[in-house]
Image (tube, rainbow, N blue to C red; front, side, top):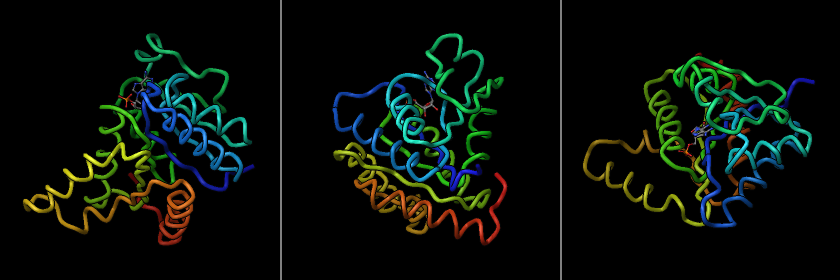
Length: 195
Ligand code: AMP
């Protein structure tokens, strides 16, 4: 069965300190899975990544993991939990394939890897390389500092409001995910731009 939609989720390879982070990753996975959606993610078995993948699969969704060989040798890979697991040569191929296979992007709490992935698709969006929506789930105020800093980049003249508008922010899964899926549908209708 063709998935109803495909969302690429970027999030921590660790669970973080707050139970609310794991809880949010579980809710996101259930939201995707119970609507017959598809998760595209980094293929790891641990942290919030593993949580969102397991929750998607256990509630009926489809899971695509994309991981470089070198990382797969070092880290736990979600071998059994992926419908498709792609082993690629490097991080660039990985991020390209993840972006290509998704209709929308969602960042949950995470670290440097998560930031890089979020900022990359944000950069590509502002340059017009794709028109897929991007969401930031601000669980328990985790991203408050980043959002304040981003406002500073606007105030200091390096970023414009229209660039900020490319990222939908919310602390609620029930607000953010329908918005992402709806916007992805509109972007598809307009003709999804290739990455
Ligand atoms: P971080 O936020 O630094 O934990 O990095 C998590 C993000 O980077 C995920 O969305 C992954 O795509 C990628 N990543 C980083 N570490 C790993 C790992 N050990 N296994 C799989 N993917 C990872």
